[in-house]
Figure (tube, rainbow, N blue to C red):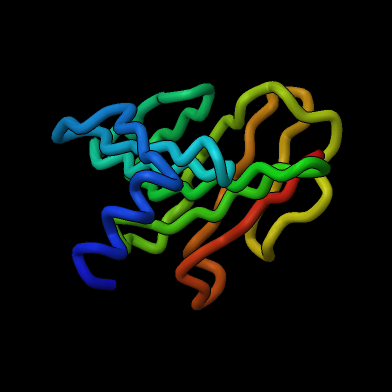
Length: 125
């Protein structure tokens, strides 16, 4: 994409910077329903109702019927990461292999050590 194309895109799809610190970098594209967050701190972080206990990259996409969350292990440690999603969903529609959900605690555990997948996804409605 050239400079003109980038400028036209930015005018059509304005990006809001939610946070830009050494611990968290986050942007939102409201018109298309995207939220991107990188939690860089070793103890994770919390933003926009999303909480993690370790470094994690998150891409949230909202459409009329569902919200999808795609996760990547930023530290490439192949470890387990515990997350909490915003409490604005009624049901879990699908989860990638290696994800478990503790409905009582409202927490998901993403196990990056069990598969060679570099990303995992949760879809809620």
